[in-house]
Length: 115
Image (cartoon, rainbow, N blue to C red; front, side):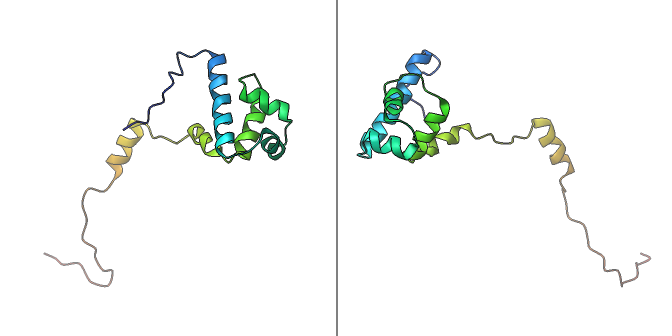
């Protein structure tokens, strides 16, 4: 079963998406009982920049990456993984090349029968 989000991302404006990301960061920071100062220090950014991110203001994407790393939330980046997929045509070709039956193995030291 597919995991569905409560948000309809396609219907949301860019500002709404940015605010949702900020709320996500703030929620997890508070759940970890960490101050903005501590997270900002661990992320190597200014506390004001973290506050901007949490409030849904536009920040640099590298800032988001640094904050995700500082909050140990880097697993959310898994959605950006690119998986190699085989085309149906290539799959059919591989299926044709696959062996369908076993053959008898002959030992090289036994002469072939005339029968």
